[in-house]
Length: 73
Image (cartoon, rainbow, N blue to C red):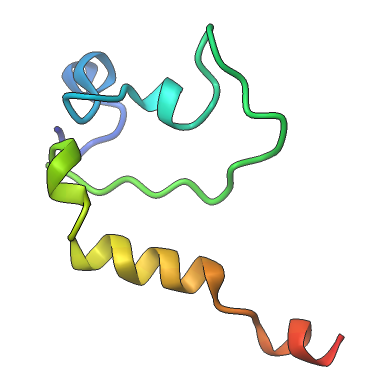
């Protein structure tokens, strides 16, 4: 909900549904057993606004598109 991912309000509220630690798999109740990198903060948006946000699409596409080296390997 904040532009700055380190803002106290954003750390408490997250995106009004998920807090940053839980979303990244580093919360006290859940650990994702692999590195989630790179994390990408988009704010100020709530959880439902993220569903169709063009920045989210662009970031996911860049993460899921194989690089040239991966094609050649």
